[in-house]
Image (cartoon, rainbow over all chains, first blue to last red; front, side, top):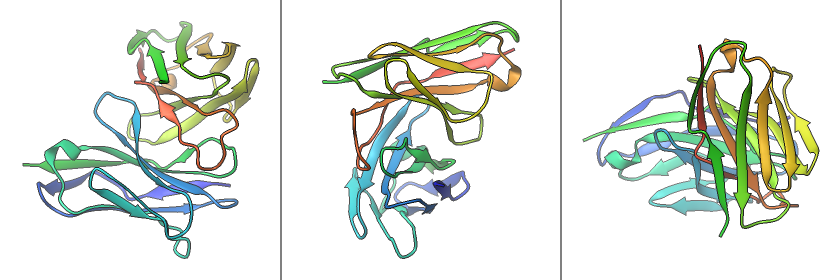
Length: 111
Length: 115
């Protein structure tokens, strides 16, 4: 079956620090990979996605590269801001199945 | 443009009471619809998904049921709530017939507390 594993949170960083949130997956078939962000009290918003190996998804300064050889899709940002504080979810889809999500990683950015 | 509405935003219900959460989508036809639950400190668990009116697939056995009485309406129900039903419930939709690249769009969620 499909599964997504994310690093445990919370991740606490100072403003302008470099961010990495690890995500690895197992999948039946060839998945597309997604990162969603959830701000406090809200639903999930798509942050970025990648649909094939070596693709790089990017948005709002965040990036993630689809690494088929390591089955990973780590989220990175060069300089985080307080406004980036949120919960980040890695997810995958194979075929027409519903998205499978990881457990989420809470990011706290301190000024 | 497409929009998704989910209500109520918050709900406090006693154990043993019934539940009805509603979700509607506008601006698209025959969407795929989903109910997810996010328990405290845990990730998103898929509860139900639907590819059409009256077509509901359940992912996990539980105290909940779902119905799709109209094309763009998805309802999550329970006859008798349990304490363990507390959590954040999210409705989502995706394009009909969407393939592997298709993203899902989420509502604002319902915070359910069973007391």
